[in-house]
Length: 532
Image (cartoon, rainbow, N blue to C red; front, top):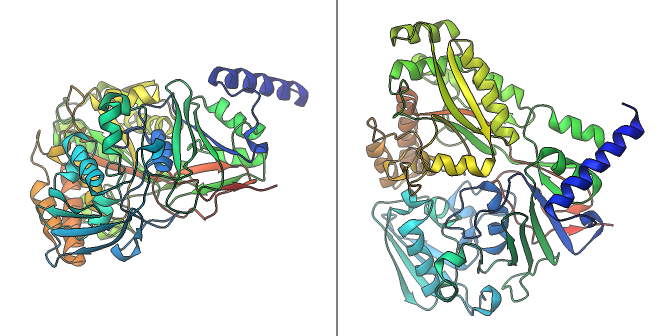
């Protein structure tokens, strides 16, 4: 195909795709008053931070809501003293790490004229999260949250948590919302009509298009440099990529697939790629209620069949290897050589076949599994599919819409469920969300992210998790977390496939105002501005 013909087709594709999502004619790159990001999903599900399960929705909640504390922009806080005052100005922990008192910032205003934030809003926000959010497992350690006055809150815990600032306080679910707004708007409408304290406030929620926000002029801190932010949902990879190259968006969630970064740099060498380290933890949930995966030998065969180094290598420069669930540079992480030999699970197809024979499947077996069409999910699972096929585990992979995939997982409709989440260097957070009995998936969608039914179908790690939380010194905490890592490698309800740097490609004219080094798969735009 000649150059002119290819350019014509690209313009046509871009025009058609952008017409479908409603941003035709708007060149974000040339407009200093708007930051527009292309989100890799079909549409927003909620603007309520207590209910988000789709990573793309967190880009908007990150702008609209705040917690009592937060790490510096672009980083994780690896120790408690690295958290910064946000809606709380100071805090203290009791010697037994069970009682935490927070002094609140005065004069903080909610969006849309809903008034000043007080301790009543903090108590309300925490109690609604405890009662029915997507992080109920971690929040179940809270015994009570009480207001000690208009600007003071005390949180008491059932068991000690030396990492409370990271496990609980800086969490999407414990973002502070306006009690007055929820009462006035109603809980159902609040899902798409957010009211927080963040540097931006919601102006539009369109389930087909995305979300729009404007600068919160009554913000307590330094006001956002750019007046408007738009999160435009663009599930189609071609449309999202061409929208960035043509200037219709300023940045996009990257295609986290082999070779994508190099191909983009060939198209535009001025592009900037922001990458978190380690980024997302790509874990594979083995549904213990689906035969034959209730058989440990089958799960061991699965583990020996999967070449995790090959997956990480295929995803470079974004991919990273994990010997267990945590990267080796996180507190509870292991290097392969530091694991017991029987838990190293170096790729061994012949051993996998022998285990399947012992389990009663000498000819292998067929099974169905669902996967998201998003590139990072589909790339990983297609690699896994080929590796499993080589030992006789024939996976019929059904690839579909990303939003629907998450909804189906929440209703226990999968066999091998790939999940991608960003976690701080606090191991218990992953254990709570993906392994705890309290997070077990429910067929009615009311459960959590424990898609394997670990701790229910077979004994789990509840006692070890309790011991980790009862630790009042960091070394004991880490030792208990390492024991959990080893137990999970024995039981294999959950497999750490690879870490994958969360990556955003952005136009060089957009300066974020800080360097992205680590952190969650979302960051704030309040310091971002366009350069000439």
